[in-house]
Every structure is written in C-alpha cells, then in structure tokens.
Length: 316
Image (cartoon, rainbow, N blue to C red; front, side, top):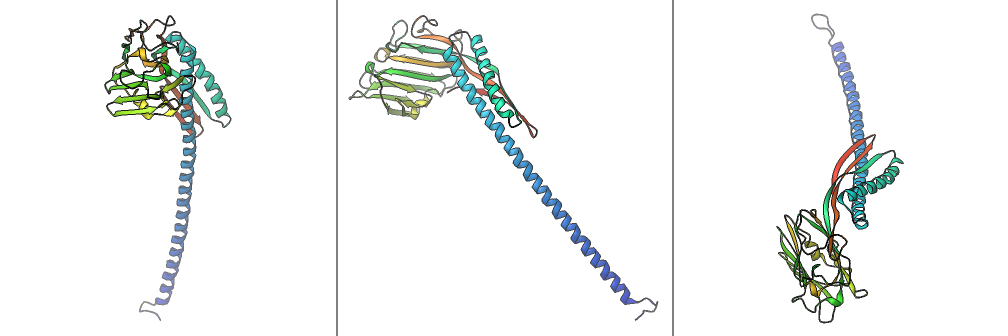
C-alpha cells in the first residue's frame, strides 16, 4: 500500500529494522572489545603488582640481611680490637666489604645488583672488667662509685657473675643504677637463703625478681639485651638500657659482687666522666674505644626495581 506520494511504507519499516539490527550487532561487538580490553588491563595490572611485590620482597630481605651482617661486624670489630676509633672504623668497612662481596655474588646469580657499604660510624666507649676473680669495686677499690657519666646511650650490658661473692638477701647487695631522663632503674644481684642467685630489677615500672636458670662452675651470666639470667628469661632486665638524654651508671656495694662485665656507651672518652676506670689495658676495670653503631647505605637494583636506603645499625 502506497501513501499519497507513492512511497511504500513497508519498505521504510524494513529499512529501519535492518538499521536497528546492524546497530545492535555493532554495540555487541563494541561491548565484547571493551570487555577484552578491560580484562587485559586488569591482568596486566595484577601481573605488574605481583612482579613489583616479589622484587620489593627481595630488596627488603637483602636490607634485613645487611643489617644483621653489620650488627655482627660491629660486635666482631669491637671484640677483636683495642685500638682507636679510626682503626675500628677502617676494620668495620673492610669487614662489611668482604660480607658484601659474598652477598652480592649470591644475588648476581638471579641477575640482581646489590650493594651494602658503611657510610658513617658512631664512636663509643666500651667499659669492661676482664678479671673474673675481682669484685665490682672501682680501680681504686671504692665499693660505691660512678662507672660513667655523660653518655647519651648504653647497650650490650653483660655480666659473668661469681655467685660465691654475692650476699644473701637483697638488702645491701651489689646494685647497678642506670639513670637517664627515663628515670633510674636498678639491678641488684644476690643469693637467696638456699644460695640460689637472684636478680631484682627496680624502676618506674615496678619491681621484678628473676631466679638464675643455672650456675655453671660457680658463675652465671646476666645478659640485659637478651633479657636473661643464667640462661632463664627475665624480660624486666631489658628495661635497664631503655634510656634517653644523659646516661649515668653507678655501682653500689661493689665489694659484695664480683666477676667480669662489659658495656658500650655512646660517647668518646674525652666527652665522658670515667673516674673509677683505668686507662686502656693497664688494669681492671678499664675503658677502650669502641664503635657504638654505624650507618649502612643499601642499594638493590633489578630491571623492574631500583631501591636505595640508608639504615642506622646499633647492636643490642
């Protein structure tokens, strides 16, 4: 049927239907293409994230290993040397360079470039008594004395205590006082009524008593950093080196305690007050130069990652 102008209406309806069909097909193709593109983008993003995560994990692991290596190197250098800060710093750099050569070779197998180098050191002073049969008095024999004054930090406090020298009961027993802006914390060492060693830790947090785990050959160890006495856990001990500001260490009643001990403080001998100590190597107790800590620059590079950081390393 035609209209007045002779145009067939049926043909127009068919054309419109075809156009709608073509348009719908075009939209379907477009939606499929968009879906494919979106899925590809999501997959690529996830893959990149996973790859970056793996590379980041390896860099973090290398940084942790470098820190542990530096801690061991500082402890080793301090233990093996009784020399100047310059010599100690040089020895640390050489030790870390040797460690880095081995570590870098291991990483190179995976195609990674890694490096850890000492870029700075913090000078300190080690205070020690090597004579295990001596009491804890000053070099002049004073039982109550100042071990160090003017330090800005203290770490690595360790005792090898002669249990037979200790007094029975905490009253008037040997006591070490560590004073700083955090307050004064004290460590008292004594035997109980059955001659079993005890550590009493007193401070702003309260009072704790810890028995020694074992006594071997008449001696037992007190390790503040590890929080242990005679191998047994004593977490209260770790409060002793929690300091800030200026640090002063004093011994009271050193004549009723004895054995060997050592500690490292932040500060050089010229900036510290060390009235009860002998010059290095002349007598017990004495002081020596030491490294308190160091700064390590770490870099880790792969085709996908470039990571560089500087970490401060201070042994416990």
